[in-house]
Image (cartoon, rainbow, N blue to C red; front, side, top):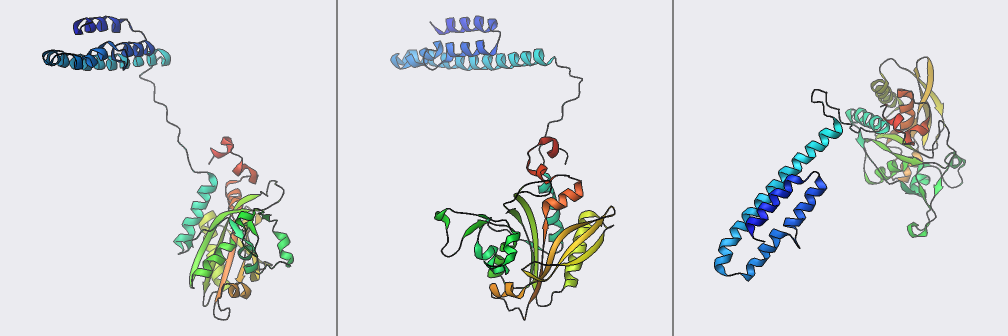
Amino acid sequence: MDIDKIKKSFLEEIEKVKNIQGLERLRIKYLGRQKGHLTQILRSLKDRTVEERQKVGPLANALRKEIEELLDKKSTDLKAKTYNLKANLDITRPGLKPKTGHFHLLTQVERQIRQIFTSMNFSVVEGPEIEDEFHNFDALNIPKDHPARDCWNTLWLKNPKFQIPNSKLLLRTHTSPVQIRYMETHQPPFQIIVPGKVFRYEATDASHETNFYQIEGLIVAESVSLANFKFVVEEFFKKFFGKNIEFRFRPSYFPFVEPGLEVDIKLKKEWLEVIGAGMVHPKVFKAVNYNPYELTGFAFGLGLERLAMIKYNVPDIRLFHSGDLRFIKQF
């Protein structure tokens, strides 16, 4: 088949094509790598004389380019026709707004909290979720025989490949061990917050989960007092919830602080516990080789889900990790 016959045959057949599948078959018939009519002519050029190659070659390449352009145009026309038939296109109808993703509510709340504390000159510090017994308990004045260990339902790791000599590994039960690691490598004065996921082995209900998020804070300097803590906490909650808040400070016990206290806020005529805190215990300073007679500091911890539930009226903590789009899309 010569070039003129190929061109004539192609033009006749392309007019009869009714769909994309037929168009693809036509492309293969003429431009296919193995048995395409025009491809065979281009491959046969090596067996022709120089005069024939000079004459046939340009014509074959020009026809190839023309066929490709006609195929592209036909493909565009067929796709447009198919779309119009399926969609019954109404060009006067307003376009549909594309659906976009957004940050999860917990991510939004954590960003709000980070922004507030960084505006108060706090640095954000993160650390490992797999911890050793020393950083998670011992250095925080919770030795092996301390009854306070019963308050943390710990998830211990048994894989010997990751075991550290003389220390067991666990999924951290709070973000306080990151404070210990930071103090081991930094000298005061400093003020930091530590956001992150923590893990507890306990039954789940509307207010308890096996994994949740905490944000803990720590300030260490030569002369830090509870008055400084009171200012920081009240300033934070006024920015997070609004200015119409009442505060109540109650004595409490945590092994890594002395004295310890809890902070309640009053919203909508109801008192809600929001923070556990206190002055850093001298034994914690000794564990990181700080001089407890020269330095003071305060530490506090709050639950991310807890604050999100209060601010956005979420009734069940399990909703945050349910993956239910009906819940997620509300925020």
